[in-house]
Image 1 (cartoon, rainbow, N blue to C red):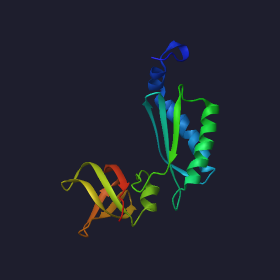
Image 2: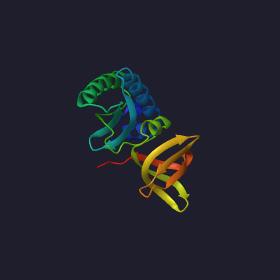
Image 3: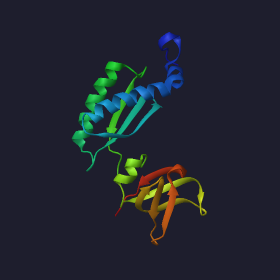
Image 4: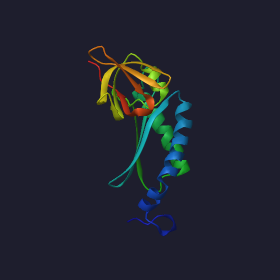
Length: 169
């Protein structure tokens, strides 16, 4: 174990304060990306051999470019280094969320109406927990998906455990 501040191992420090560290990383990320016209889709921080791996997935209407990712990476790297939030070495990666982008917010569901999506629920709805189809709407807290047979499925937003876009061919 590597000695960290106060004589504790840095792994222990990070596990004890990971939610606080993630909150600070998120604040910095929001500040940087908003100024660039970008949105954060998700942030992951995980321990790997040789240090930490910090991933930002960013997006914007019309999709992000390589230049967007490079510019965000450069600015995030500067801000994170100045704040010195992660108490060990880390690798920063900034990329697009991909074609199978997660749908996490109400805005995501509205923005991607008409797109093919996969939705998983915590509990079965009419015997199913997995739905794939066109995202029709989000109204009054209910997501409507129309499957390949044309059948609409009304799924309460609160019942959704995971949702993402499907790659369309």
